[in-house]
Length: 180
Length: 452
Image 1 (cartoon, rainbow over the protein chains, first blue to last red):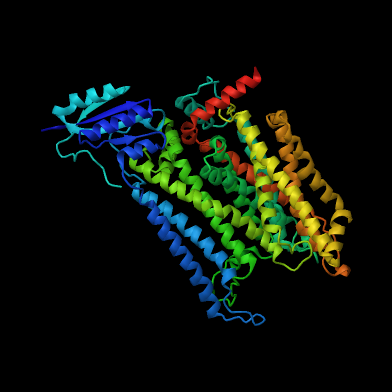
Image 2 (cartoon, one colour):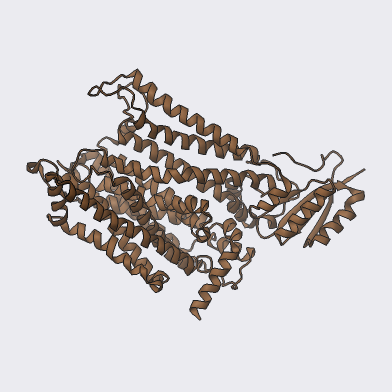
């Protein structure tokens, strides 16, 4: 059976979310393009939260430990006795620890975003239209050709402003890009 | 300069795109004349700095006991200016403040260029700037042990972290907008925007991770804002110098930084919204809210001045009393009273709702606040050093031509970088304006009602 790529564009976020829910009910996982971040789209498509949180936590812990390592390590390597005060002054060092925690956590967060979102994207993503960065929400799904009429009707019922279909080469892997 | 055509009172996503994209059109003759004007003063500042490097710091007005004066004042001033950017972009983001969406990109951009300008001054202040890397606090072969108990070392970590996190925050927030600009651009701009937007296409996966990373970055930037200017204040407060050694400095400096930074946002915002035709995106509602932040922080600053004076009076410490007497009534006491007028008295005009939505009044008040906050740093830094614990050493600082023109050059450098950014990258966040389009429509209706 040959497959086709169906892309619908919507002017309204609610219509887009409604379409996603209808497609998921029919066990088709769409790819969605949006000009704005949408909590509703995210909730419709995903369970749980982004893995970026783990990256940030790991980066923050690494940064804090690095802060302790650089301050304590340097102090004990050059043991400078200043008026009999302790060689290592933890309260003063907490400022360095804090700054490095923020620095490494922030950098890890950005790296986590780039890795998980697969950015930079070297190849154009199929189905994308310049309208999707402007004023339209896009829903793309790959389906069997025999299902295309039903999907098109589903899109139009949901209020799609425009529906396009394009035959896919036989080797194209269908459609989902799921996961987190 | 291009001005966008007026839109309706109910702007759509397309209207927002059209207005912001119109700013990204090639600049005209006036724009490039302005850039050349700024570049001229940057070159003069650079030439005077070259002369200073060649002939030594003797060409400045720096002499015992005032070895920190204009340059360090400029450093603290520019770091302070940087703070409101992160306040508006990160802290107000966490609080979901509605009016921030139209102004936060401009404020964030200002933050980056202000920190870059501030970073010049510790190097300009060096007699041998080619050894600037000796300042970097890392264990090294030169037997220069970094003392992690020193506030100057804390400062190096804090400012570097601040610049990095603010840059990441600005860059990340800009990706969807640059992708938007890419989709409408042609020629070299399309290639440039394609590179900067890194193939962003707004898929559900991209937004999902973007939103989480942006939220967490905002969460990290929030305590960072508080910490950085606290650390800058400890450069002074940790020293055993009358006029510096005070426990109030951290909150006092943070409030002052937000005060001066928001004033600088208004100084930049008012001409930009007029010249670039952004009046329908940056409405009087946005200006009104920025003015309220200035008013609030002005009151905090006024309270801090009173509190600081009270603490000195209550301590009955003779040296502190003498220093503050000189600050108020000494040979440069007029600077203190100018500072009070600019920071405490003139902003009181903002209690008037009409003043808060008048661009002329706001622009003038913001200029006074900028001057007042620069004077505050000068009075604290140079004034306190001039009247140290040894009266036989007392000497009030007078700036040289070199310092004056390097300061002017730093303003020109800041304005030049900012103007270049505003013409080539989206200075207003299209994405966030669209997210909060309901509030923009309400603001436009409110403006219309007032005008009617």
